[in-house]
Amino acid sequence: MKVLITGGAGFIGSHLATRHLSLGDDVAIIDNLSTSAMENIQHLVEHPRCSCLVDDILNVEVMRGLISECDLIYHLAAAVGVEYVLENPLKTLTTNIRGTEIILELANEQKKRVVLASTSEIYGKKNGNVPFREDSDRLLGPTTVVRWSYSTTKAVDELLALAYWREKRLPTVIVRPFNVIGPRQTGRYGMVVPRFIKQAMLGDDITVYDDGEQRRCFTYIDDAVDGLIALASSDRAFGDVFNLGSNFESSIKDLAHKIKAMTGSDSEIAFIPFSQTLSRNGLYEDLVYRAPDLQKIRDLVGYDPKVDLDEALRRIIEDFKR
Ligand code: UDP
Image 1: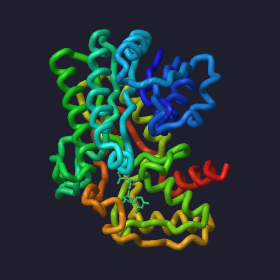
Image 2: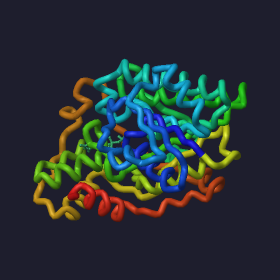
Image 3: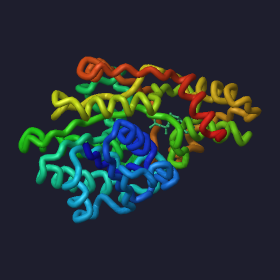
Image 4: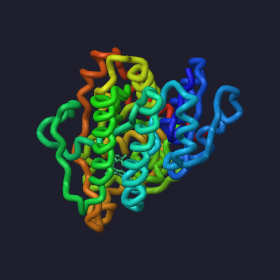
């Protein structure tokens, strides 16, 4: 099989590419390196079954060529990370909406299977029914809070993919990842785990926003890749939406203490009031709680995340040290 991964030089894409190569598949990567890095795929560029193109998914002719040569597309290229989204509101909209339109349109010309990476941001704020099920209602704040634009772009992507399935029978699967973590993830655009590990290892303050009682479920990258590949291989997943996450839950305050202890760091844990964080201009709003209901993906493909938070942090810290 030949697999095309848009955003393949990103954190999730690079791990997915590595796994597909080890399964014996050919892999083509396209990435514009906006939030990713060549060093994520340095170990792949010499691989005889891997090709990597630095270009943009908005480049229709390039995409048409790549799609014509593949059997399966993982569409991961997107503007991600709360800080990136806040700094690049327009690019977020065009990359996430126009980019996905282009991929789906071209995939439909050739009826190629598409796995669309959506997001757990889709659900928005805690709205009385956490853990979130795929058919849960969504609760977003106003359009003036930039955070919600990311969720909205991904909702448009999902609607497009569902419409292509319903009207054109384009085989698409929609996946909503929940706080995926692992080696090679950067903290530059928000993500809390690589940020805290870097701060702890440099002896800087570990910056917990607000009181740190916000809670998240963290999914180790290997489990996320298992889920993505299982869904991509299941014909019964077409035209449907799946959470991809774990129930390895922690408050952000406990996460900071854990990382401080595991790295043997003498960093201080600093509690930063919201008024001094990203929310200072009223463009950002935090989420109190996010957790997935995993029944659907479990029932369909037997998904069963195995790497708990302690083991995940141990592996990431080891990688940081290297
Ligand atoms: N967070 C934090 N300090 C940081 C970065 C993030 O306390 O330096 C918190 C953030 O407020 C959120 C949680 O960690 O409640 C997870 O943030 P992240 O950006 O990783 O992902 P999110 O789940 O918000 O998309």
